Image 1 (cartoon, rainbow, N blue to C red):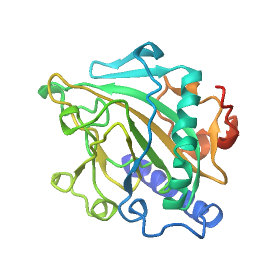
Image 2: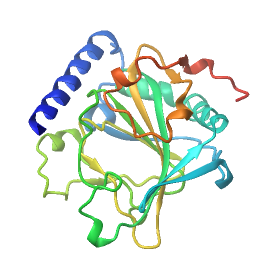
Image 3: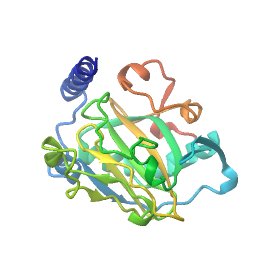
Image 4: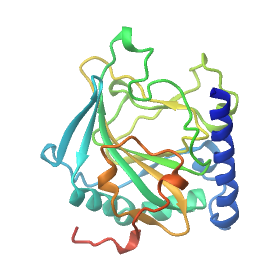
Length: 254
C-alpha cells in the first residue's frame, strides 16, 4: 500500500510540476537566486507586529502543539503588510519565476517533547519532504517572536543534499533561525526538513503560509476558515473551487 501511495504522490508532484513549468513559469527571473539553487532563502522585511495575545483563540491539538486562530480582520491586514507593503510578492516572483495563490495560513506554538515521546510525530518533528505537493509549491515561515535553536527552529537540507538523503545522517541540516524581521521561504517537496524540539522552558511561535503557483498573485477569501483544519494536500484539487481575489485588490481598510 505504501508503494502505491508513493507512486500517486510521485505522479501528482511531477505532473503538476510539468504543467506549471509549461504554463505559469516566467521567462525572466533570477535563475541564480538562493531559492532556485538551494530551495530556501531568508527575506528581510519591515515587519509590523499586528498580533496581540487577545487576537488569538488557542486550540490544543495535542499535548505539545497548539494552534493560534487569528481573526479574519487580522489575517488580511497581515497578508497585505507582508506581501504588498514589504513588496514580498514581487521578490518571491523574481526569485522563483512564479506568481502564487495564498491559500492556507496557520499560526501555532510547539513545546518540548518528553524523551519517551520523541519517536512519535507530534508536529512534523521527524525529517521528511511533503510528497503530495507540486515541486513548485513553497512555504513561508514567519516568526511571531525571535526563533533560535533553543526555541526549536526548523532544520532544513538543501535540494542537492536532499537528493541523496539518508535518514540517519543529520549533520548537513541547517538551523533556520529567524529574527522578527526575517521570513523564510522554502520548497517542502524538494528539501528535507523537520521541526526542531524546543529546549525545556521554551516554545516556538510561528506562522506558516502555503503558496501554490498561479497565473497572478491571489488570496483565498475564505483563508481564515481553514485555520482549524489540517493543512490540505494535493493543492490543485483541494483549492480548485476556492473563492479567490487578486492580492493587489485587498481592501486596505480590512
